[in-house]
Length: 554
Image (cartoon, rainbow, N blue to C red; front, side):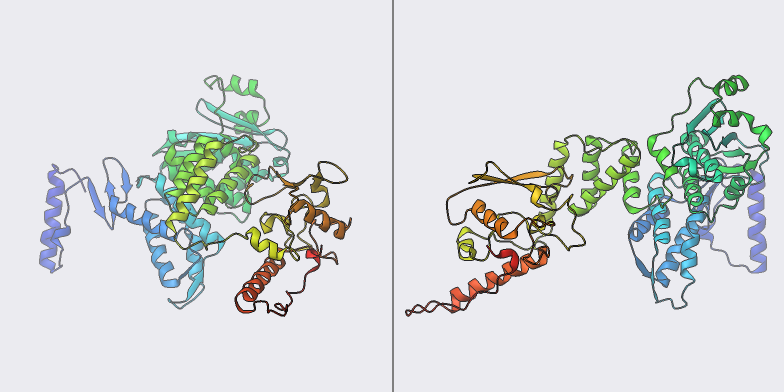
């Protein structure tokens, strides 16, 4: 490698070609390149002018497509896993932090000898694949060349944490500090020391792109964990993986360095909220601290795998839209639903993703984003549901209503209003909860004596995903199918027993399975008697209907 116009490089190449010819070493001349400052070697482009290592564009697209196919898989053969590991291992030559997210896949592949044996991908391996899935869309395939023995780093940062007040870090004129919450006060000191390192890597990482950062810390355990790249502690391992993500995202290299506590007095002032002392020692410091976004603060609190499928996709969406994950609003959520829709996700999956985003914002201390009305989001969800049902013909069975004519024939054994069975039934007695299922307290009337209107309050409903509650009003009709008369008759037979509103005579709750089973039996009986057993002239009729369960007795 060398400049094209450099005669020394040209002479060196000629000497090598002549030597190979004399020794009889075959050469593939079509692969010969140079002299040049940008050379592709073993599938990796080496640029000595820009000091960059990068994957060719086609290889990057192929890798992204392959990771997308693996994202969400739960099993594979050993042959498939080894092939996938080979692709990621090749990319790790450029993405140095990626090696930490490959080790568990390699360990899994050693569990069986047969190449055709099916292997189940555990949660840890799926999390590592999730890291690649989240990282690749934000990566341009370029990594900086770096001499591991470089004595003078491009940047130096300092941090410290106290067990009493909080933590702090500074780099040049920029600094940050944060007080501990009640929950965080119970963390180990090693976790507390790692948190400001992670925050600094994210908030200042863009300024460190392509450089080497020496992070000075007075906690030897933290320095060893960062240098080793792994930890047995789950919380430390989680924060370390976040740091590696920031390294890969912003293409910088982090080197941990241990310093004595007396030499880390400035960061110690920040961690103990001695701001005036810090500013006097660092006169060039900014007047205001660097803001740590709320979503980044939350990363320190999450001790589980943060690269799960839901959060990973939401982070990818936010990166594409150039917006912060939290706080969210109706515009962001509408775009997120549209983003999920074009990726062929089911309607119920979209709602689950919205619930996950809602949970994360509540855990971040920002409140419920759905507390206020979001009419546009509801319209977008409704449109997604309708269009998704059109795109999957035959996926949903046709359901015909139970008409008044059918109910008139069932009225001796069935007295119900037109609500969904899941709203009036209970899965089991152990699953009964008075806060979500119907009880006697959920029934009210407009007047005593002879009520004209009865009200049922549904605390939870399939059509009420945000659990705001809805009231169903039943009016007296003075006809054979009067819901008020039927419900009053049932309540009189039921008595004042505690438990679910609808239950059998022995106190067992009415389950959805029992309800559907009895209605199906009644329907089959009605169809059978109508088609094959008409009443005779002597007045004999069809056989008796199925035995009435206790909850149907008037």
